[in-house]
Length: 224
Image: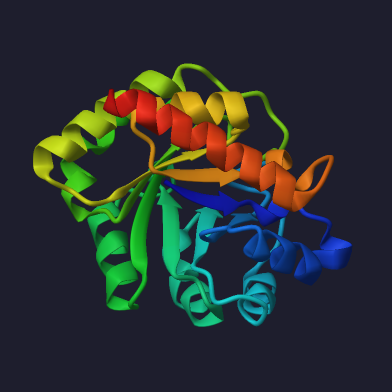
């Protein structure tokens, strides 16, 4: 089980300190949401912020491109320090070409699905992925409530990945807290994007620790 705090929920006035606190608390990776105001309504940040975060940590950077025409920016985000580049299924019709290009750049290749996209549409691509990201909220806004319909999607993908013998990460992004994280872990998720549940009220260390305990418990339930 890997936890990736989402820096969109951190205090941007003290972003470096937030990264350090989360890393010291045991964050396995960091998630960066890139939004262009077109594919999703909001605008967040570009390669400069990825580059700045790269200088503060050696943990993997999971860069989620919620943008139109992602092929235009793969090289730039990889050069900025992205270890995983996640593109949206809905943003392109050339999925295999983009996934292949990400791997050519030396990064791991991920694919994200909006809540209203049937997960079965990505079945033929599962063998080409390092990560399949199921969205637990509608992309573009932080702080949304978790959509329970994500859980059967996770179960479906978990079954297919296991049948293939794939080691790809099954990621859940959006609305992840102790309760929903445990449910997602029980449904088969292995990579958890966590924003407000880490950078909200209280200590980053205590928040991340409580979240990890809940997720580990959910994963144990799945094993049983």
